[in-house]
Length: 159
Image 1 (spheres, rainbow, N blue to C red):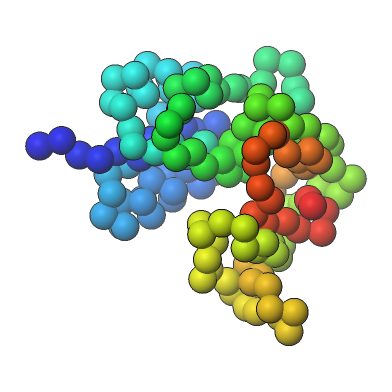
Image 2: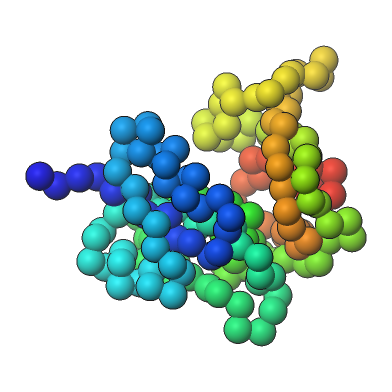
């Protein structure tokens, strides 16, 4: 029997296994693969969607881990933390060092431009936008989105 597969590309994030488990809890098969083996894995397994995890490195470092985005063509793709930053940088956006490193508790403002965050909120301030209570650990921030991308969420130090 053939399973639908969501591949989680691991850039060393401390929560990559949690992402895999939560996808499986939703009834979808998921596998995690280290970033350096992503190309072979995607060619062999042909996942229906790809998630790029976070990691401890900076996309601004020399020889930083990367991803061949041609492999994801036509597939839903979600970047989280480092995964989002490498996606932004490699696809024409800009990533810079943040002035304030976010580590620990943070509040993310959902921007409502897509259905991905629809109905997901920890609280709703009087202004009506959803706020998510989360834990973060990063020092870089995306300062310019790649062409065709939309802002979905932000924090005060990562607009």
